[in-house]
Amino acid sequence: MQKQFLETGEVVSTHGVRGEIKVYPWADSPEFLLNFDELRIGGVDYAVEQSRVQKTCVLLKLRGVDTVEQAMALRGKVVEFDRGGIELEEGWFIADLIGLRVLAGGQEIGKIADVLQYPGNDVWVVRGEKEYLIPSVPAFVKEVHVDEGWAAVELIEGMETDAH
Image 1 (tube, rainbow, N blue to C red):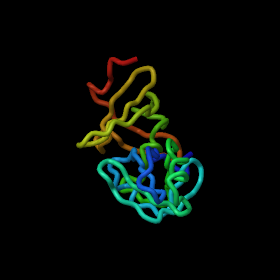
Image 2 (image 1 turned 90 degrees about the vertical axis):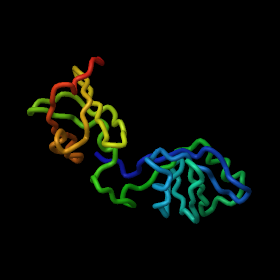
Image 3 (image 1 turned 60 degrees about the vertical axis):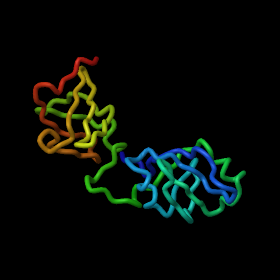
């Protein structure tokens, strides 16, 4: 089952004296966080009044957080977004893939334990009795059914690793 709210970063510090917070994003780029008018921090929903990128982080001004003390109380908390607030080209988030059963030739070979992100394409780390590294490209990933909890792949020689 897909989670409604997905983790996207962490509040690492305050910025200035008017209650701005600095968020270290876990997404591909800090610009991703600029897409949201609302975010959930530590289980509380906040309206985003202003957001901007500062180097590798995002500075956020949240409605109702107007002092350094209020901003400091958010430090160390996880920032989440509502998945309904964004559309993806691929149709799923990495968090949706973790734990999916992976089938090859109709047999379950394991579950997606991790997704490695490389410039060319992502690589699924599938762990079962053996471990496999499967590039997330149409030649190898044949079907993905997040709602049903499985994906079908085609394996070739070299995808099986020595890890146990």
